[in-house]
Amino acid sequence: MRIDLHTHSTASDGTDTPAELVRHAAAAGLDVVALTDHDTVGGHAEARAALPAGLTLVTGAELSCRIDGVSLHLLAYLFDPEEPELARERELVRDDRVPRAQGMVAKLRDLGVPITWEQVARIAGDGAVGRPHLATALVELGVVPSVSDAFTSEWLANDGRAYVDKHELDPFDAIRLVKAAGGVTVFAHPLAVKRGSCVPESVIAELAASGLDGIEADHMDHDAPTRARLHGMAADLGLLATGSSDYHGSRKTCRLGEYTTDPEVYGEIVRRATGAFPVPGTGG
Image (tube, rainbow, N blue to C red; front, side, top):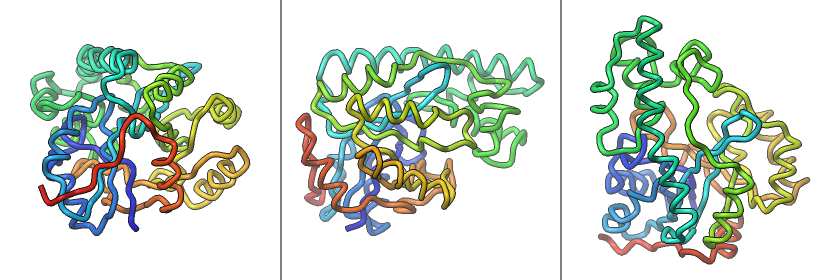
């Protein structure tokens, strides 16, 4: 089995619609794909309806969190999307995305970049606006050569000149909320230092003690020594170790299935979940 547990669609900051994403996942030879848009489940219905035969959909979301001034992302799988407390927190994060993005546009303009809010809104479309949309605008304007080059201290990284904070969950609260909704939590790209500051390993240990289920070890932003280190950390802390592409369509260079999750680890995620179940494709 080939299992990719971290992808994005136009419901947040990917370039594939949810229907296109599941079709591309099947064409890439995946057996299981998780749709984990940022702080939203808005793409799940379309992905379900278009799910090809032979492909299983895992519903999820990537939750925006912050601790001690450091941003981190928590992948939440197979939770009940109607659970009210978690739904309310997702809505608070989404509602803050527009004023936050507008604040970053203002900072970029102060830095001499001729970006406009209208340009960013056009790029985001109906998706939950985020930094990749601003990064795409910077590419369009010729300020940077690629989206990844915008995520530096020069521009949009967590310590960047144009960075603006947004409402984010405390990760301990997020773990509690996802568990209450019957879901499973995995810390996304925990040591992706190129994105900015990362939480110390002591915090990962505290999160594990508070119910975190796993860490995303195999990811394009982790080099080989970092991946080995994270697999060792997972073993030491009793955490599941996953692998994923973090696919964003044409917005990033990663390919569907570039990194994958061991079938036994996937099986344990499914076993632990009580809020929702994987959706088998029937050729819709």
